[in-house]
Length: 183
Image 1 (cartoon, rainbow, N blue to C red):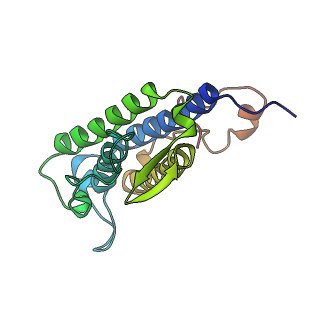
Image 2 (cartoon, rainbow, N blue to C red; image 1 turned 180 degrees about the vertical axis):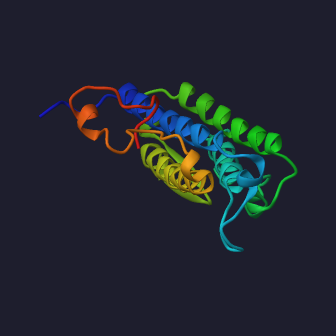
């Protein structure tokens, strides 16, 4: 049995998983055109744009001033994250701002921070739990985004992991057929 992970190991693992998810989402989103980026499957479904806007808004709210303020910031308007926006560039700006906020927060963590708590919607939560809960939230939306991108691109989809029919080669150490994070 291996020894428990140290605080820096935990933060590095969390950071790696967030970055793998970001890369996965961006590699999927770049495969769709603007019409597909904003398209929904039905009136109750989210578009790739809405998912990216929501994740960016969530990360910016949760991890901005996380040591001293509630993770649900008064300036966040969650419902607006699911409304249409004027351009792909506007969505990407929100997406990038959220990831920048997360990166700054993760980069500032100290071992002592991991023994502390954060507040989200008035609830006091241990910081490691808040990190893993948010990571799970982001993962869910990223995988929705990937499924939508794959749906919209159809036969022009470029796989983000091991292509069909190449699992054996990958298992034996051959090429995966795609670079980037695993799915």
